[in-house]
Amino acid sequence: MTQSCTILTFILLTLSCSLTSQNGDNYVQDACSVTRYQDICIHSLASFSHTAQHSPSRWARAGVSVTIGEAKKVSKYLMIHRSDMIVEGRNKIALLDCIESFQNTIENLHRSLDVLRKLNFQEFDSQMGDVTTWLSAALTDEDTCSDGFDRQKGKVVKSILNRVSNVSYMTSNALALVNKLTTTGPEALKKD
Image 1: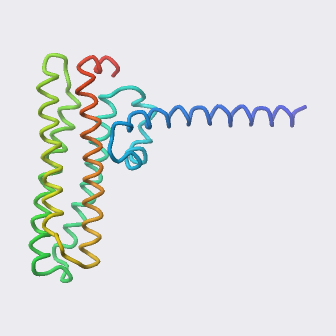
Image 2: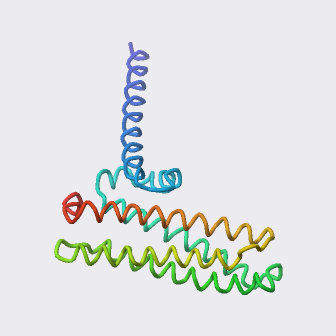
């Protein structure tokens, strides 16, 4: 009797965990459905499923927050290669411009997150306009970084471009989540 109870308990726990996981997956998939790079969105935001659930403002904050983390990693990577002898000539100039662009990107992402944390009913439209502007500027800075390496080759350049592209995809996703919040309107704040 004890063994059958143990097996039944195991089956019920497995079923319960499976249902919980599926609900979490549904939350992140629903949130990411508005993004252009859904696989990246789902992968980067899956851990927020149970806290964000159906809250557009929480998903927007999560999207910007994970993008900040990734942008900081790329910025550190760029700084490491700043004094790298492999990167020289036109690539060196592009790298220095890219470092500056990423500093601007990180600043604009932080501005966005700060406002998203302080949203209120009275200033919602103005706040969302600012956030959209800053996220768009971050995307422009990321594009500027990539453009500097246009038609350049090399292992380091390829690695830089891959990392910058990933941050651009995440920024694009964050902007899509912010746009969803904007269209939902200040009523979305009631879900926080």
